[in-house]
Image (cartoon, rainbow, N blue to C red; front, side, top):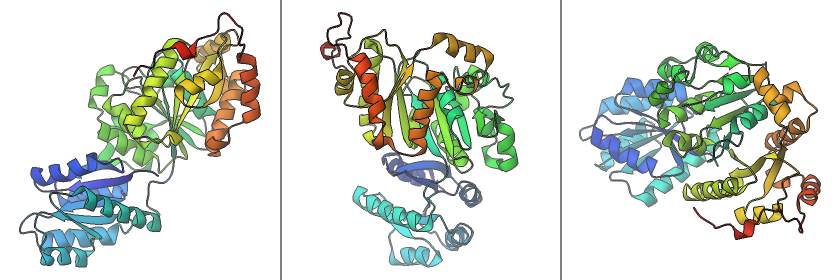
Length: 406
């Protein structure tokens, strides 16, 4: 289930801090924005269409706050309204409910009461079809560099048969534009700088079009521009773009920094790319443990082997046992074709549609598009396992002897 999206408003820093603490401490909620005045809240709710808006009522709150609630209720009926206050007087609660609020939270927030409110907001969002909809977000990630994440992400996006956006979130060294042969005039930095006035025309100008089905949100041209991008900006950006595309493929940098984690939080699927060598397996194991600590369900994580070669003898069932994860794809190593496609600025799936690399990436894309992760192609996998599992090979990688470090 996708996290609920909240926008908050409080006229004091103390009230804002208490609400944000509760939201940021819950894996069920993502904070899209924090406002200090009514006009900003109205504009942000209308623009972002969050699951809920949380309004902190200060001591002495009266008709101004109740009028704001009425405006929100009338202009954004798909967004639930939650009021919060230290003063839980019957008059205040009744006044906010009569104005259109759906829930009330007393400050300081009690976790059990907050979870009960979240349950009700989830029901409201489901009934009103305002839970995060639109694009399915697919994050392509590896905690180890040099395994071909950008190549795989670019070709996966190009292999989708629907309206897809490739978002280059490798903010310091993103190069997805060159993989697509594009000269991107704008980047995610421009998107963030203009986020308060985005409309369809401006969004279309800020993303670069590769084909009728594939667009790119480029990484910053200059490395220092990445410093302007904060986790909340990524959450807001993906939320906005998810309403305009069917799929968003994220090309992520190789660290668990706050921006990357914000993107991973929103992903419906995480494709963890690995190489079949001891450093690659170790980094994959560590990443899986980080995902577990972050509270991600294993059902949204899938492991893909890139640059597989039949000259490397690996007992795949031992790799899977070591990771406690099934490998859903084995992308063959074809250095000449891959480098040629990169140098030409054309995805290999477009340049050589019948190559083995292309066919495997398209198969993985098909699994994602049909949401049939639990029904991976078993005959295909067994055939590959038969090629790899040479029990008597003296060069086989001894996965069982590898230390299980995190």
